[in-house]
Length: 614
Image (cartoon, rainbow, N blue to C red; front, side):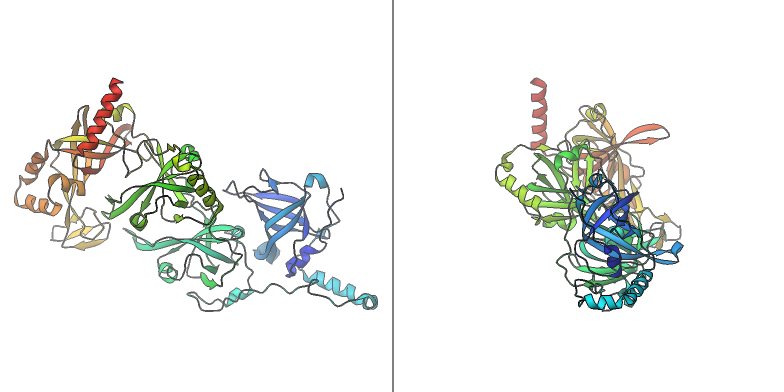
């Protein structure tokens, strides 16, 4: 079989801006570039068209790639470039800029092992393309007479004009955009911290909520959004003033030109996107809306089936898709750090692997979700682990969609409607169901015997216990009066109180409770920390009422603690082993206190009796 015919001179034409359709080229060398992503490695390749060769060509390996088998590209492979783009990067050693060819999609024409040699006699393409133009012009003038006799009128197929650059001088919440007109659009996959002149054209696939912070160093706000083009995706984050400037302007599913952002290494703890880098908006950043482009892809998923989650580490970010088989009630929690009220809901998903897992939704998503038997796709779900059981949640930056228009959703619907809904599914979250679901029942003795609390995130369980003793000292403290801040204030002894967290002084404060209680069940006893809302429930009084009573009566706190002794409640605990000075102790915190549900408690006791007598 003869070797394929290369598109002679294609490299020179492409870098001049001539539009060529599916040129045939040869890879005569490649070098892998270090990357954190195993699925999408990058390669710098030496590319030849038989006449010229160029070393400034980049290719990103895609999942199930046919060119890079095992992540390596075979030399002498002949390819058809189906999608590609050109760009420029700074080249200080070359005294200016360098043309770069970015390859987005290829088709292998003939494997390099079968070719076995370099086709043609390619020479290095000069950095200054004008030298080739001058050479060709001189050659043309020397043979003008012969060309006239055999000439024909050039057509658009010979030399087409360079692609039209985007006109970004229109209105946008940004600085002067006139400099964009001289730039070339680059694919997201080619971005790196070593470039400073670039423009990307990408679709916003997700925009997170505005998050605010306040600490001793100051206060601020931030938001993140995800961008996608044909080559890949990347996360961008705006801080402080950038939130006011761009948050409302950027809309999900719209396309934008973006430039002059800082490119840095991505923090994989907070992003599941397959990109080693992320962007940060700055004062010099420029963003302009672009007209809809039918070739621009929408959200990209890389789904993981549920059966594989059992072997994965906690905090791993993944994409999942499943059918919602069960919907839990909305639950109200109070954040210990801020005192803010949180809403959450647990739903159970199943997939074709005959596995089920609990998905936790928060905030507005939890309150509005009501889609039983619908397909749920989550991008950027975080794996959590409680007592050996695995669950998933949608963190900030993650998104979920109902009945997405993807092939996996249609396959899942067909499976579920044709008998999948009747199949038994292994529940990966069975042991505890996470921090807010129906935790398993354990006695205090069983917690010790089974070694709960050894996991990194701690374990959850529930138990019915009786209050045996409450330490009345340090049961109450004076906290910052600011809404959302529960930091203990410093009494300045002049009628004013200082909050170190908020960095303010005030004449007001609020009372907060934090109890250290000894609880007992039939198997033993356990000291537990109980926070303000649950303390108020146990005592039947608000923290302010207790504070006012303690101010007027020195024995009030002791009497309050004594009155609560021997009361019985149903507790949900979080346990985690902590080490202090090489001494390991099991720390127990009550995350929920409520009246005993005797129906469920008696059912649990009966099941234990049946297990003992079986």
